[in-house]
Image (cartoon, rainbow, N blue to C red):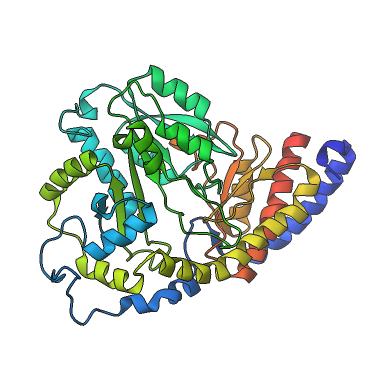
Length: 424
């Protein structure tokens, strides 16, 4: 029965029963962690072969990867990411292991030097702003916050960020310099932007000539089932139709494909953006880990090889998502007290409690030995105005641990909701 249909006495009786169950969980002394989207050990074991060092160290163009050089990446790695991005390999820059690092540096370069040679640095334009689809990726928000950039939340819809709001804001305010986007299996909602949303991004008319879309395609190959997956329209191709290709950068990495802390990453962009970025990078470094790029490129020579490996990842990940979704469907949905999106890929499930309950749910879980992402972390400045969103990260725990975690989580959700309704 839905909570809204219960009388006060029924609600109180249910609350008392749930508190007894909750105390039992607390007494078990559990230590379960579902706070970050990390691959499980069995996933990391899938790519043991990538550690095999090349015997010749020579790229297809004759470059010896043990030496200095090749600032933008070896040809094999550029071609691999070009296929991932759906862009020319010549427009790709391959970096170290962290795409987040590349995003930080890209913001930093724009802040200090401008986005193109004739652009004024963002730091010299007063108080600038960034649009932040919410809920979103907390580390994106920390980057802009660290530069003192004002962050403007934009609500997510089932098609991606609310484009009506975005179009209105960027058309009128030249201080808005960019937007964070996770366009496929978004973090944390698991939403893939619709074709219309991508087309509207490509056609954006912005008051700021130096506006940039940060297209973090972190989960572009992270499907739970290759036979039942989402598809994302290619933003670069759409931008070419409107002559707006300078307005975006796209990023990806192998962090959740091979080894989370020892993969390779890349960004791609228009030729004008590429030339300016390479000029700045040539001052910052000589090259990245080209040996690691060669290892990865030989282990994963093309997108088809990546998809084969990701199907093995899905074998471990999909059942974990199903444990979470089954628990929510069985233990939360009948009460009508929350909602969530059922993603077809990515690493997260975004859960929305009744307004004013998320922090209490997270606190209850922590007291019972379950660590979750902090409530509010998925919003700029850690401020969820509704105190309702909780990011569930099901990949790292074992299936047994995950089942225990969800038992506690569902009890905590019901307790927090009942406390709100009973004004406790």
